[in-house]
Amino acid sequence: MDINFSTDRLIVINYPGGAGGKFISLALGLHPDILIQEQKIARLQMREGASPRMGFDLAMKTFEKKRDTNKHFEYGCMELANFNGGDLQDDATADERLCNDFWRELTNQNRFYFFMIDHTDGNEYEKYVNRKTIRLINYEWIMKEREIIPTKFEHDINGDSIAFDMESIKEKSSFIDEIYKIFNFLGLEESIKAFDYSIQLDTLRTSFLDTTKIGFTKEKV
Image (tube, rainbow, N blue to C red; front, side, top):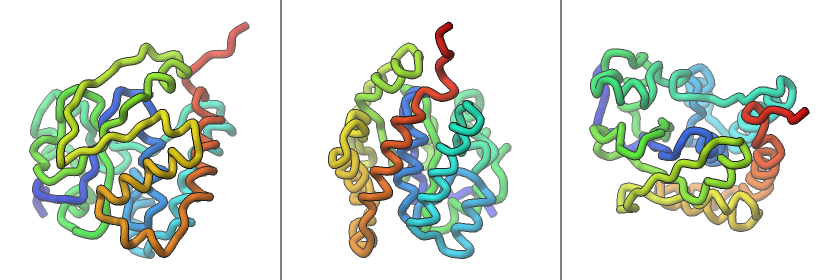
C-alpha cells in the first residue's frame, strides 16, 4: 500500500517546540474519530470504536505519568508513524523511506483524523495537499513558564488552516469555545451534538495548567 498524499484526514499542528500543541491534540482526541499519537492505542481505537471516555482516560494518563515521574510525557509522531517533521526537514522523501505500515493505512482510510507536528516556520507537510493545519497563537506564556525562550511563528491563516488561541487555556469557556471551533473546522459539528464535552475539557485544561512546568523547569535551590 502506498502513502495517499491526498488524504484529508491528516491534521498538522504548527507551533514551536514546548508551546503546548500536544495538549491540544489530546483535548481534540475526546472526539471518537480523532486518534491518539500512538500506534497500538490508535489501532485499538479504530478496531473497537473510541468514545469520549476513552479519549479522556488516555489524555489523563499523560498528566498522571508526569506527576508520578516528575518528567514530561507525551504521545508523539514517532510512536504513530515512525518519522517526524524533523526527518522531512532533512529529506523531503523521509516519510516514504521511514514510515510504518500504519501510516500508509491511516492515509488510505477516510474516517479517523490523525495528527502530526510541524515545529518549523515553514510547511513540512506541504505535499499532503488536503491536510488540515492548526496554527497555535499566543503561546508565549507557556514557553516562558517552561523557561524556554519564546519563538513566534508568522503565518497567514487561509482556508486550509485555522488559528488556535492558547491564551484561551486560562479560562474555561474560552478554551471550550476554541476546541469547538476546531471541531467545526474539521466538519465534526453534527457528531458532537450528542455529547457535552465541557466537563472533560475543563478537567483536561486544569490538569494541563497544573503540570505545565513538569519536566521543563528545575527547582531553584
